[in-house]
Length: 277
Image 1 (tube, rainbow, N blue to C red):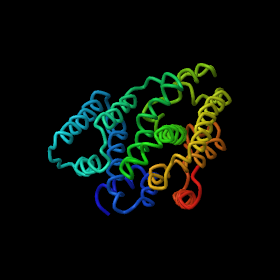
Image 2: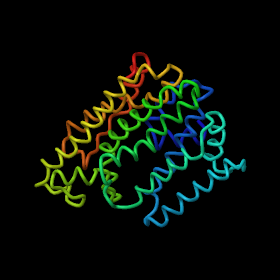
Image 3: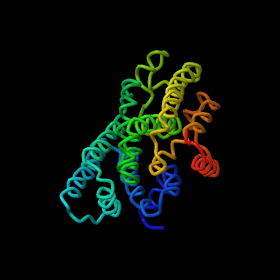
Image 4: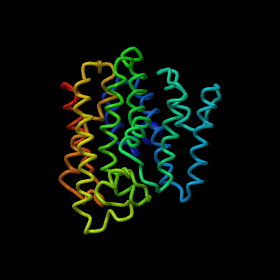
């Protein structure tokens, strides 16, 4: 297992497992894309100050400039990404926007609204699906743009719930401010026992939006050709995550909604062999 593959396996298990269903010749390029995202997504957890996070993020933005200028890269992820960019004809703005979206992670302000959360997830999770499809089959990728956006939002919402303990530890709040306000909550009082019922209702809004986007994705399934299906495959894990979050209620704040690797492998295998989503 090479360094990039091992990195994705450690930091993005879902997409790593899904990548195993991609054609072997395209798999390294998918993994390079996922590794790039994992690098920028984990910045907030690596540093103690937003300013330091901004510096790390700027390094990746400068590295992107170098990649598109044809500079040889020493960093293993950047080196692998340069090949993925060529294979998928990936535009620089898409990778830059993906990185810039993660600036939100560096600060403690709540996500302003559900609409803003969907925008954030579109630039990150949705872009990963869309760019992954481009790596697999550029022609087929043109047909599934709407499906990619829906897939990214649905999966991303499931991960908002799954990673609530990490977000709390980093003083992040992905539960939108407008949702908190509707239920009389604030980011700093989510763990107060008296607010358990309100928290459960607020989290239910996120689950219901994820369910809605999954339903819309199902309607778009005919636009997802077999050649690009591996870029969407990890999204099949959204429903198990949402079910776990639902069963845990407000306890998901402290426990997350993680599912076992064995179950992930089963769901991915079953989905890969049948009609998706």
